[in-house]
Structures are given as C-alpha cells and as structure tokens.
Image (cartoon, rainbow, N blue to C red; front, side, top):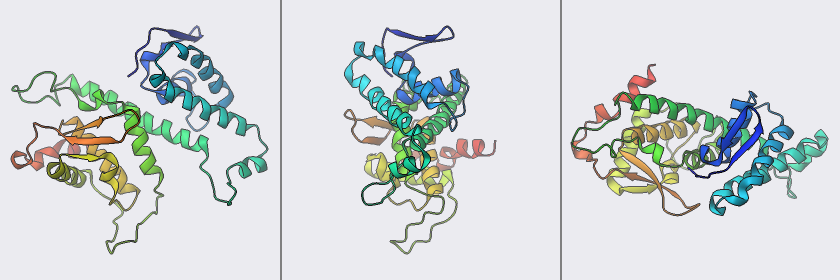
Amino acid sequence: MANAAFEYHASDSLKFSLGDFEGPIALLYTLIVEEGKYQIDNFPISEITGQYMEYMKQLDTVDMDVAADFMAMAATLLEIKSRSVLPPEVEDDAYMDDGDEWIEDPRERLEFQLKLYEIFKRQSEKLRGLETTNRFMRDPQFTEEDAKVVIKSFNLEKLIDAYGKILFNFSDDDRRTTTKKIARDTYTVAEKIVYITTVLSEKKSVEFSQLFTSVYNKSEVIATFSALLELMKKQVAKAEQKELFGEIYITLDENFDISKADMRELVKIDEEEGNN
C-alpha cells in the first residue's frame, strides 16, 4: 500500500490520505459506495470524477510510480464522463472501431472492477476477523511473522485486476472446443485446491495466468481463483510480483511439503465455509 503524508478534504465529512488506499479502485469505492452511498452500477459520473480530480491535484507530492495508476484511472473517468454527454446513437457508435468491431465499454469495465474489489474487500475483512482467533496460525515452531495471512502482504488490487481480466473474457455459456474434453457446469473449490497444490509442488512457482490456461468456463475460473485464495489464507501459496507492472507469480511456500500434507485437512476450511 502506498504511503503519503498529505490529506484531501472533499467535504467536512470526508477526510482521507493516499496511504489509506491500495490504489485507484479503493479510492473510487470509498467515494462511490462508502461516502456517496451510491450503487456501483448507478453512480453520478460527473460528481465522482470531480471528487477524484480534486484528489489528483495532490499527486505532485507523491512518487510517480505510485501516482501512475491513479493517473490512468483519471483518464478513464474523464473518458467515461465525456461519453456520458453524447446522444445515445453517437455513444453507441463510439464503441465501434473502424472495422465495426465492438470495443469494451470503459464504464462497464470499471463497474466490473469495483464489484470485484467489493467482494475481496469483504473477504479480507473477514480474514482479519478470523486472524484474531488464530484460525490461520501455524504450529508453534513457526514465528509470528510466518503466521500472517499472506494475502495481506500483496497489493490486493493487482490480484483483483489480474483475475478480472481473465474472468472478463468468459461469458456464462463459454466453452472451449479445441480438445475432446467435455466441460462441466460446476467445479468445486476443493478440486481446484488439489489441482493448484499439485501444480505448485511440481513447479514451485508459476505465472498467475498459467493457472487458468486449461479452464473451460466461467465457473471453473471462479473455482480456481477461490481455491488460490484458500491456499494463500492457509499459507500454502503466496503471490509475488518481481517487477513493477510485471507478471504475478504464484509460489509454493517453502515450508509446505505435499508428501507430508493431509489433503483432507487442506480442503477442510473450504468445505466448512462453503456450507455457511
């Protein structure tokens, strides 16, 4: 998470600093949902863009590596705002390229990212609550530092964005037909926990995107990502990024040995939570 000393005051009731946010999606979520009390799929783009741009005026005091994502989001908001004032027929044409191919609606994409952020924000809050009960603590031979929930040490927005890009490419009825395999309608998280654990035990580290190269539909994408989160919570796997804007790698924890692991115990929390 970025750290900065300045604060922004949009109103008497709104006060925050850059250090409060992992990135622009976190800031937008606060402006739209927590402060504005709007629905993600029905917020006033002009008002939110104005608040965001006021906040952006402070970014000249921040490291440019930190500011880059915020600046890119500002450009997206301005594009959405400019399109919102177009007549409907002109707006429709704006999403067609010269070859009459449909171009992704930036507002639709933004709403998708915000909804994903909301899901993982709630999940991370739940994890923090569970952490106080030592539910994810390791045996005493490990240090307190080892026992931290791994997902908290990695920028959540980066993981959400990478997942969102993969999920966005799948429609509800998407099926790949390049092989003879018949895609099922549903996949369990427990199955994917076993799959990811096996892959990581063999390769130790894989690109995040490689975990999804053989998926056949959206339900399998969701199950795979949910399984990854479970493994990160249990400190079997961790997410790493070796360079800014580089590929995210999923790495097997050096203390995990699959030959000594009880796979029934490994999927136990998933089964318990799945029944709640």
